[in-house]
Image (cartoon, rainbow, N blue to C red; front, top):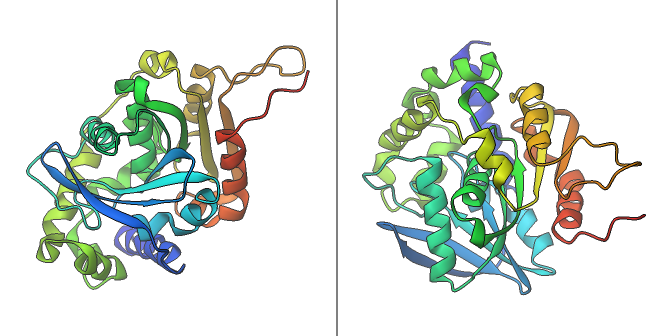
Length: 288
């Protein structure tokens, strides 16, 4: 399979994996934040948790089953970030810093002083950056499949990004979903280029900055995820992981590696992942 076919297949699977579930009724709105009209949906009651989708995705693409489960005990705020779903793109770089500032501004708009944040891929990087840039607003972070540096990806994954083009998406279900949701349905090719510019740019959140974050983090990856295993271990150790838990107190952060799972299929492992996330967000005292 050539690179174009591979990328196209991956992106179609990502879309179809999310749109299968029936959409639930939610309170919806647009928040005026940092030049955006950011679309969001709110469902449930309880402690707030924010859900952040992956690149090229929307709420329907990642989160419908998550919303249904988490909203049983939580106030769930699902977001569509810059250029995604119903949130129009603007003339501003798409960066983890900008996206995290948007999430913080959305919380202010909703008068939510602090929340847990769960993110996948692009959303996971944004969630970690929220904890770095806006620590007072973040209680706990679930980071599903994201590195903190560009070199956190394996070479094969990193080699794919320069080959992204509109031709890979033309006529795909992902293009159809963009046109269905976006307030600028004819700008899909521009959006592809905007995301491509982001993924090609080197980035580094800073190991010291991640280590300094106060929010406990739950790192979740597939064993064939595209993020280097050494990098995963590095992030987990920065957050206090890797101790001999039978002889010393365990840290609050956690790590899960899901077997026989890729970056794309990870979000299909809901039956495994969601219960672990719920347990992390509502932790029990450690047994002595």
